[in-house]
Image (cartoon, rainbow over all chains, first blue to last red; front, side):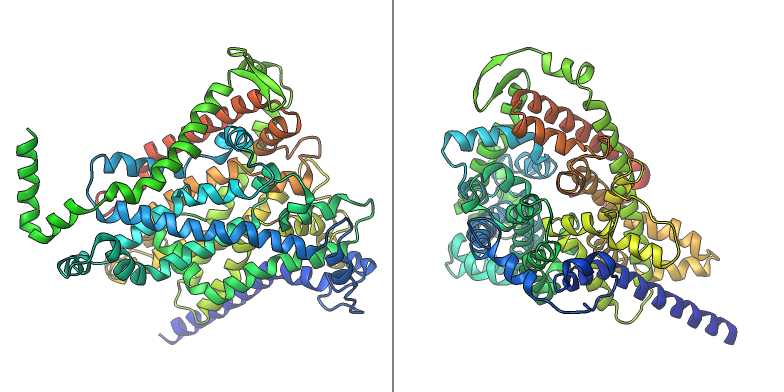
Amino acid sequence: MKMAKTKKKINLIISYIFLIILGIIMIYPLLWMFSASFKTNNEIFSSLSLIPKQIVSGGYFAGWKGSGQYSFDLYFLNTFIMVIPTVLFTIISSLLVAYGFARFKFRFKKPLFALVIASLMLPTEVVIIPRYMLFNSLNWLNSYLPFIVPAAFATYSFFIFMLVQYIRSIPRELDESAFIDGCSSFAILTKIIVPLCKPALISVGIFQFVWRWNDFLNPLIYISSVRKYPLSLALRMTLDVTDTISWNQVMAMSVLSLVPPVLLFFFTQKYFVEGIATSGLKG
Amino acid sequence: MAITKASKQKNKKNMAGVTKDSLFKKSPAYLYILPWVLGFLMFQLYPFIASFIYSFTDFSILKPMTFVGLNNYIKMFTADRLFWPSLKATFLYVLIAVPGKLIFALFIALVLNMKLKFINFFRTVYYLPSILGGSVAISILWRFLFSRQGTVNVLLKTLGLPSADWLGSPNLALGTMGLLVVWQFGSSMVLFLAGLKNIPTELYEAARVDGAGKTRSFFKITLPLLSPIIFFNLIMQTINAFKEFNAPYLITQGGPLNSTYLYGMMLYENAFSFLKMGYASAQSWVLFIIIMLFTALTFKSSPYWTFYDDGGDF
């Protein structure tokens, strides 16, 4: 009996050591990037240390100024202008559609919902060329409309699915009693469903924020002038402007570009975890 | 016919309560789903069909459309010297990245599920790379860490181990990119962890009483009950890996010797660098068919290895 107990204890200690080492491996690249942004260019290449021998903030100042016509305050601003409306429209449109699917009976509901699920698996690569031609003919290229308008039309099926699952878990009796009290279906949505759905809506918002913030392929295709570049394109530009890349500047701007998603993650972690656990789907 | 149907429905609802009936009747359900219907038609169905039609044409944003029949497909399969290597690299990449990520995620979820303390702390640390992994910043970081004079090689040298040209050698580059996917195992891990929490502990106790060891209860209880989650993860992760674009484009530019010239990058270059939009559409349809075949195969095989206690009803 005693031996079994010590054996268990040893197992536990081994597990902790393993988890801690793994944690260090997982986080080390990020910490290294952060410290590299304060190192001199020579030191970046030679040292593993997370503490710079000599802390220089030049990477941040020179990096922020950029090498071209524009500086990073423009790229940050552009990213926010592109991402925030997209996120808000995604939340609103996905909520309306999810409410329709979760709470009402109507003809062709099943096949229509099957289409929502099917479009979840449709790779964007298949539709990207016709979309590009469509946006071209609408004169939307080099603007943020190709990001914002599709979001307003609930084209992110993943979020519809997630919200449908969530709304289904809210007891229907609440809607019904509100209905008896004379609430319209829209009032039921705003007064009952929305407050109860708050965690799920926040999940949608933060997932969409992080995904749009990190998005590279779509801006690369739709945005052509540097003046409208979001961060993802601006960062890439820092790599191919000069022959000798000032790595500490690149690292400094990379670090800054990750600040909003990281802050969001730490403040809303609970929703991240809940969101992906309730949807049970995506990674 | 209509009357009987309506009255039938009414009967059904009367049992559940009269209010429900009138609630559903008066409600403008179609109005709520209208945004999706329009969005689906404009931004999904129309482009989906259009790209199929485009795939039989030769055109670009600068060039008018001409029909070329099956030429794009014939050229792709017989004359494009990049197509088959790219397809091969993509399959290899999927084969490295997806099982690597899922197995690792499952393993860590099992360890974390042993009622350890600080589980929230570890979960946060492991999950963070999944949040950031898709960004340009992380691709840049990867490119730097694994470059010839990069941090990984410096580390290996200090440990007295031989260094390697992680991104410059055709044998290693794809694996190094796969590692970036495995590094983001946290998102799958959180899902597995949630699934593990839902498995009733009585099952394990009963198995122990019946004399089943740990390995046996893992294969007979844990794995079957997690299988629906594994199933969805497998499909979504595979689709994502098949269309990977950022890593090859930003880290290796498809090289060395096209060993990381993944399908997503080939598509992008044909469509937007070489402006062969008809040809790229054909390639996108081949990708679509491959993904559909894979998904269908997974679905078909799922009754043999996934277990739904509610009979699989959605």
